[in-house]
Structure formats: structure tokens, C-alpha cells
Image (cartoon, rainbow, N blue to C red):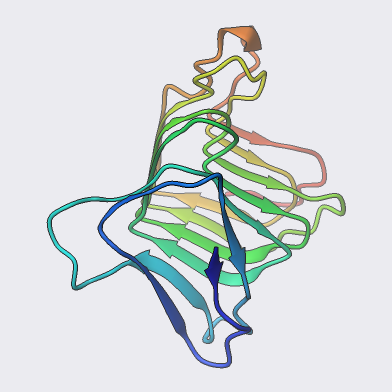
Length: 178
């Protein structure tokens, strides 16, 4: 569990070098504004070994979070990063997603509310590596998503999908996308 109380100033949660694996990682706590974000990033004092996460990062109704410099790979169940419900103002920057069981990045909401999602300078390769019937690079439901300077390769490796896989899949309710 990655945990910080609701931030009244910027908060940094550092991922240490080596591999991190579990049955899933849950983000608890939110930033309170764009200037009081919670940053989940690599520890700048660590060098050498990679900072590898091998389980889904999950958040529900979280806001003002930044994920930066992380490697999420060999996830054997679920997506790489999953945002649910009213999660918004989330930035995913300079991250790598490789060999992900389902979608690399998923945002699902029942009310189409998901403002301010930014995915930038991120690489996604080999998604949908198992017969899940789910295999997009990015699956997004909501509005106001920005994807820039990112690469998606080999999305939808699941043969069960029968040409239904996408690099980026944006579901109903979207009012703008760039």
C-alpha cells in the first residue's frame, strides 16, 4: 500500500531499487490541489538496479497524483495501473509498462468524470499477454485525457480478442481527447 494523508503540501513517496511485487498495490490518500500533489517516483538517491513493480497499482477516487519514472512489468493479473470512479488530475510521466496481463493503463468510471488525466513520455509494450479478452494499451472512460510523446507497441497480444484490441481505446462519455 502506498499511503499518504491528504496533502496540504507536496508529498513524495519514493520507490526503492529492486523489484516490488505483491498481489497489488493500492494508493491511499490524495493531493489537495495541483500545487499540493502526491508524487510516486523513484528514489533519486538509489542508483544501479531498476525500480520494477510487478503488480497492479490501483486507486479509487484519488486526485492530484503523479507517477514518474516507474517501470511496471510482468504483471500476471489485471492491468498495470488502474484508476476507478472519481480519480482525476493524475499524471503518468516517464513510465514504462511491459508484458502486462490486461490493459497497461485503465480508467473506468460509472459517471464519466475523470478530468485532467495526462500520460506523457511513457512507453507501453506487450499488453494483453494472456487470454483475458481485455487487451488495450490504454483504456479510458471519461473526458479530458491528454496523451503526448508516448509510444504504444504490440498492444492486444491476446489471440482471444479477435482484432478487438487497440493501442488507445476511449469509451463513451468523452468530450475531448488530444
